[in-house]
Structures are given as structure tokens and as C-alpha cells.
View 1 (cartoon, one colour):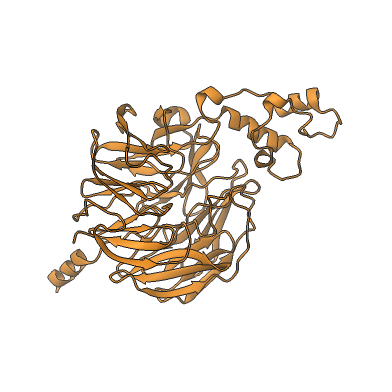
View 2: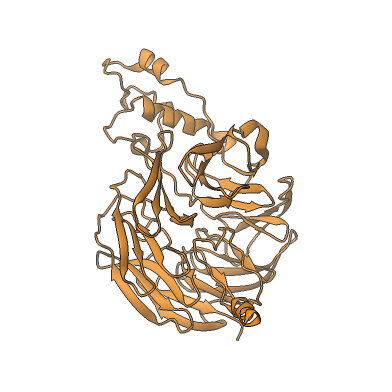
Amino acid sequence: MKVLIFLACALAPGEWTRFRGPDGGGIADGAALPREIGADKNVVWKAAIPAGKSSPIVTADRIFLTGHEAGKLITFALDRKSGKVLWRVEAPGHRDEKRNKLNDPASPSAVSDGRNVYVFFAGFGLVSYTPDGKERWRLPLGPFTNFHGMGASPILAAGKLLMICDQDIDAYLIAVDQNTGKVAWKTMRPEMVHSFSTPLAHQLPGGRTEIIVPGSYQLTSYDVANGKELWMVRGLTYQVKSVPVIAGGVLYFNGWAPGGEPSERMELPAFREMIGKFDADKDGKLSKTEVPKNWHPGNWDMQDLNKDGLFDEKDWEYYRMRRTSSNSAMAIKLGGSGDVTNTHVLWRYQKSLPDVPAVLLYKNALYLIRNGGILQTLDPATGNLLKQGRLPHALDEYYASPVGGDGKIYLISRNGNVSVLEAGADWGIAATGDFGEEVFATPAIADGHIWVRTTSALYDFALR
């Protein structure tokens, strides 16, 4: 009997239960993967699905996605083997919120405990469903004050569903019981403004779990049991979108935002000095006419957090910090307590960084893909550049994060151009492909299959 149980576990299908896989690393080794993928290459099945930019997650027999259609927010499940849509259900509400034109009402990806599915819609909040689409619980959240709209995905850790709600006013991290949807704790993040990075859970010695959350200007660790801050690192850029990766007790992260390049940094006076010199009407705030034009932000409304047309102290100090923030990829030694910036940051790298895609650590190399099809590999131990080159088939924008397995790296550009690399510091292009339509979602990988969401369809690829 023990042998049979062991064999059953060994043969159980692999899973990809959250954005970028079970540990957020984007890697799924253990089975052969196709060398070529595209609209007509190694396709097992193709399913028409509603619009949306969330990424697929995969359990033993289901694939879960979110989307929107005719003003409705939708969660749906497909059969893993056939691609047949098993069920679709509308969210309990739909609030249309401000967002960037590249954002989407269904951008955050679902997460699963292997059976049940959990989703977040900025237009409603959190909802959980059974494997068959029956609602388990709901928790309305918002409305949100995120200038570009919400983008982070929920994660599961230590019996809790965790959701980062970074926004311009009243940013917070919330934890709810994954079985009941009741709030376990809520930690305010008053120093934060809008960001879009999905957090990462990490097991600590002694059985505790931390959740590591990148945000405006700093990366923070919290105890999942109670939401208390454990440690933090300063020096991130002001608007983060990437996802952390952990290996060997070291965390790797990339943060890029417009204006964070060294050549664009600008030292601005503190708010009190600005008021003393330029507050002509003595109302204690700064108007567009009172701020010298050469100090104006490129987008006044984005820095005006409460949208009253004026800069108060929080608005100005946020903008001031933005002008001195730094884009960088970095490595951070885990552990410690309090501010560990000066003791735990192992290296920073600041050249030719990605905007949205997360870093990928695979085969002892750190991969960074940026717009224009520029790919770099860094030495994870030192941050030194190992190789830089262009992907000639895909000189394009990139929103999907790279994923890897079976010695291959998969990169898909916004316009659906595929580059498959032979993994390694001295990477090379093994094959190319094309979907013929846009791709924003990050692929999922399990058991020799790779699933890719395009504008109109979900594809399943495997060796044929």
C-alpha cells in the first residue's frame, strides 16, 4: 500500500498554482518541453476565451483564468487535458476604476490551493470559488486610488490569502483566512503609493512565514502570522512592477520606472522650503503656477495624490523622492531585522533594465529582458554582466515575464513574437515563433506543457 501511495504521488500532475509558479520563480523542470511554440507549432489544443491580461494558473485537472466581457468580471475554469471551458461565473459586482490604457479590468492572476481558486478584481475585491465554480466567500474591497489601476495578484501562505493594495492614499497589505474570507489582519503602509508587484512568501527557520513586498522606494518583510514588519531595504524605485525571486537565501529583484535613471535624478528643496519661497497665496500648498516650470513633473496629476490640483506636503515629498529614486536590479541577503539596507544588499546593477518583466534565475544566470528585445544575463553572485544582446526576431515591448524549464528560456513580446533560448550565461536563440496577436500574460509550465494566453485564446503546447 505504501508503494502504491508513493507511486500515485510521484505520478500526480505538476501544478503552477500562482503567478509565475508555486514559488514565484518562473521555473518548472522535470519534463521535456517543446523547442518551438507559436500559433501553429506543437499545439495540443487552443481555446477561445474572454478578454483579459491575467496569467493562467494550473492545478492537477483545472486551468483557472479571469477575464471580462460586456462589462462583467468573469472567473472561468478549463479542463487541463482538453481545453474545454468547464464553468464561468460573474463576480458579485463591477466597479469601473481609473487605469492606464495598458492595464485591464482582469489583470491580477488567480491563485489556487490545488482545489479552490481565489481571485482579485479591482472592480470588486476578493472572491473564492470551489473547483466547480461555487462561491465559497467574498470580500468587497476598494474603491482604490491607484493612478494606473491595480495590478498585483493575491498569494497564499500559512492558511491565509494575502493581497497587497498599494495605492496613492491609504495603501495596505491585507490577510484573510483562506477558508472563510474573514480578515485576519490589515497592515497600513502610509509611506507607499501606487505599485504593481506581486509579493512572495518565504519560509523562515522555526516554522514562521514571511511575506516580502516590494513597494515605493523600499522592500518590506512582514510576519504572515500577524502582519508585523520584520525588516526592510531602502533604495527601490518609486513604482515597482516586477516580482521577487529567492534562491540560496538571497532575494533578487528588479525595479524600473520613468525618471529613475541616474542622468534624470534631480535634488529638489523640502516642502517647508518650497512653501517659504514660492507659496504666493499663503494657502500652505503649491499650485502649478507657484512651482518653477523647470521643476514641474511630467505628469502633475500622477503626483497629486488626492487629486485636488495642488501639492500638499505628502504630494511634494513623494515627488521629491521620486526625482532622487534609483532604478536597479539587486540582490539582498535574507534575514535580519529593521533597516538592513547597509548590511544585506549584496549588489546593485543599474544598466538597461526591464520595465515590467520579472527577473529569471536559471542555470546559474540571472535573465533580464527589456523593451527593444535587449536581453542581459548577470552573475547572481556578483551582479556582473555576463552577456548582452538583442533578440533579432522580437525587437518589441515586453510585458510577459520570462519562464524556463528543460534547459530552455521562453520569452514572448507584446506583439506575440516568441524567442526560445538555450539557457546559460552565454545564451543562444534556439528557435523563434509567432502568435500573430498580442501577449501580455506570463506563460505557465507543468509536466512538459506550456500554456500561453493571447488576446483571444489560451494555447496548450507540448512535444508532439
